[in-house]
Length: 411
Image (tube, rainbow, N blue to C red; front, side, top):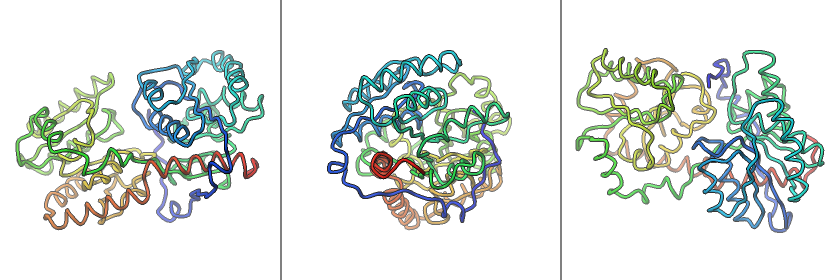
């Protein structure tokens, strides 16, 4: 989906955005609680789907009840594995008649299952969930996961449902600023909760050399050759074209540069990438790799991880996951990256769309000596563990639930 580019957040503005933290005791203050999360489907491995499962798991592990309503999908089995409940409802449709019919379906579900809080994570189901929550008198919370396209007045109206939560969770200060500026949401309603990395998965001590070697073999990477990786689905705003241009400007044949991510049906764009690499003479250096099932191993075999998004990332999961494993990162200087990369300490920021600046940054990182890499790795890991853990994200989200139920519902 194309994002708005006029959403820059200054460093001072990001630092001033509210970040919520509470210290209520869950067991003492909320002995019972049932939370219903609504989402279109559980098919993709995106941030919305992953966050839904992670919060459901956190609720169950805290002895609470977690229900997710969606149209279904492969990730339903993950909910089952963490002992959360799933209810199939046609929530993926944007048809106004379907959205209206889903109000009755969700109202019935809320009443029959004794739901205490309704948490919406996407626009179409949020419209149904909002009115169902109003009918039943339950608090309604939203998570704003992206900037969404807002090219028309009607589109902005459609998006605005995500601002109607009694609390609006923003996944970064950048998104919080966007919600404030574009939709007039007061800061008192916004809670900044950064997305979190699973530190039980993205841990250097848990990624075995055998996994890394196996992946390097699958990708036919020569031993000892530096690897530069841009991970993300093949879509234009992720900046793969800028990345290929930067690789060409390096003028090196002694490296391998990987584009890791599926095209999700964008075959024409994939051919465009291949054609550009061929035309610039780097088709022997750049390789497009489809979706990877073992991203921790992929990061560990990489010398530089790049995020070249031309539009701002709402958060930027790849940049944080790579830092959790001590990998040097280079990201475009906008959006969530300004909050997750400490310039010159855990990584570097370059102007969006600037292939020359990106090439210079890649060359700089490849030239780092062993000592400098070790220092950067330690700083990057420490930063992620302090600020961007899944555990912290879940705790803060449950704190928002408690705030709404115990601390008063008027923002």
